[in-house]
Length: 391
Image 1 (cartoon, rainbow, N blue to C red):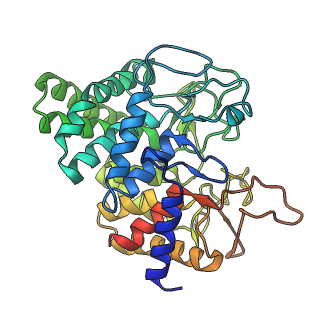
Image 2: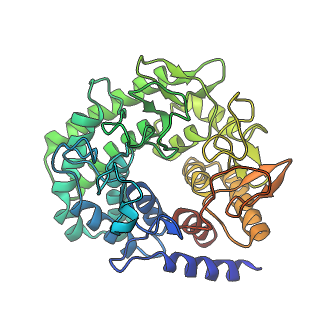
């Protein structure tokens, strides 16, 4: 299959996930609904191809933005939702949740980031002006609810005992990451840093309050200084997966710090170390970067979050490499995902690599228990489409 054929097929796949309101549902056949994180990232991926998706995503997430404190739904004022299962039958699958469900630490900073990226792409100040109050509310959530202890980091600890224990992109109901809450997960601190700079950009474009700009700029500077000190594992020359509830590092090597690259939170003298570490053989495969190192004691190649390869995870790293001028390494990731597509004839939610051979986890694997991957996932398809469309 040549590049044009792949591009056309990916466009059709993305179109299958478009809701009547214009945003992208997370996946099919599962997660055919609105997800904060997934819908934001897939809208970002599609920005230069179809910016109307980002506008529709920002619009619906603004509509359902948190207004009150509700432990069952984990809603808080200004918070952006994790997911909204509109279908009562799908809601019934999680009877102890309340929808919209807000158990996501990263949807809110990513919402601010997407608003700025949309504005940069379209210059649509009219629309962004309409959601300016929502953007301000999202910022207030970060500083008032995300950072409850005032240490500059945003952390999560579920309010609903049946909700998601982990609330970053490697989320789950169980404590599979083995981190005592409140959890300051590594990549989200970068998302907050870029959200601060995004907020400054929007405020300047809309000619808003100079005091707000001054406050946000100060917060960004403080966060960057603290982050590079507290999360850096000197012996590994890499960033820890998280700080736990006692502010101790969760010393695991994962793909998560790769998400920091596009945010520019990393000090200049650490960037090379992070880039090199991502391409060491315990993380790198011919089909992309694993989310968890083979050297970690809990590594499992068939695990959803402890050893598989996620295309969207690789795409976020790819964008950071591009932004920082690591074009050769970015190209390596692009070729790896294309290789995966050509082997599987699709780009599913995730897959794994055993002895340098790709294994499709969207179909049952004989003799192996694993979570079935979605064969069609918005941020996998849109990510690869962006890679082969916008060079």
